[in-house]
Image 1: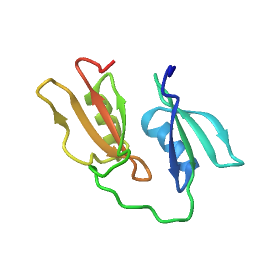
Image 2 (image 1 turned 180 degrees about the horizontal axis):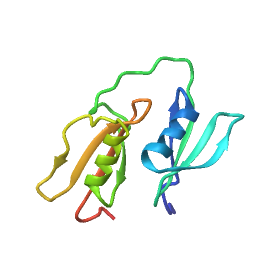
Image 3 (image 1 turned 180 degrees about the vertical axis):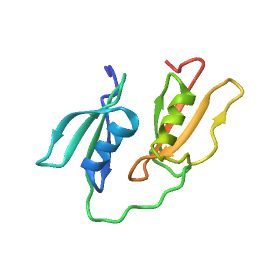
Image 4 (image 1 turned 90 degrees about the vertical axis):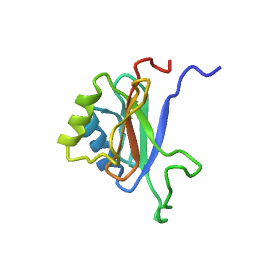
Amino acid sequence: MITSLEHVAIVADDPRALADWYCTALGCEIAIADETYSTYFVAVPGTGVLEILPSSDRPRMEAEGDDAGIRHIAFTVTDFEEACQHIKEQGIELLQPISVSSTGTKLAFFPDLEGNILQFVYRPKPLR
């Protein structure tokens, strides 16, 4: 039935700027740029795709980390410390201190250009 997760859609106030941010800050590449509809498919290294499309004029709803719904997008990294240092060098602040579990899993949360929450995760034993 399902073979993989193809893409996650992010609705943005400035789709082009957000697509460019993912390329600059995280090393992604624009796979498809549809300037007519301001929609961009951004390829994430080693995995799927982010679709970035324009938002409406309605105001954003405030949400807390434990409210129902999707709250972050997690990216696995090969070198956790290097990845965290890279985003800090881009001027991106972590939202909370890095956490390390008793099993050695490391997590770092940070915002993208429009405030969507992203996460770097390193697991000694991958989920899959």
